[in-house]
Length: 150
Image (cartoon, rainbow, N blue to C red):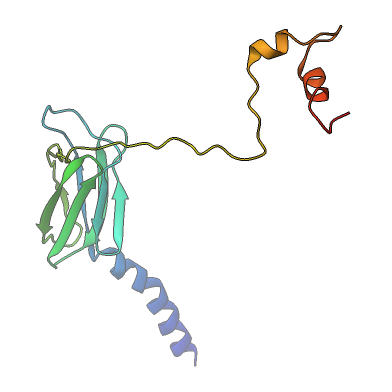
């Protein structure tokens, strides 16, 4: 029984070590056409992903010894795709250059319609407010001149 417990403990300790050894790392700086770093670039590979920082730097851990497709995407730039097959524990530097993705849209036509006059609403010109007799010229006195308002 003691041997079984010792074997299980040893197994639980060694499994994470073997799991860590099955990854590789891709590092780099993402640049634009003018060699300026680009921030907020999304880097995705299957379920794994990260984002470049304000200096364009990124680091992504990927599975080792398999072909892994990595996609670099940004809102205003064309996507960059690359496939990697790295060894266990390998660190690979990849510095992609992303190009502008300008899309020409067709002509935009704006049209408008006059608003309908709604019944029950009376428009009052500012000049009318000034002609109201009384000590307190204002909207309140103007409303009192309308029929049905006291």
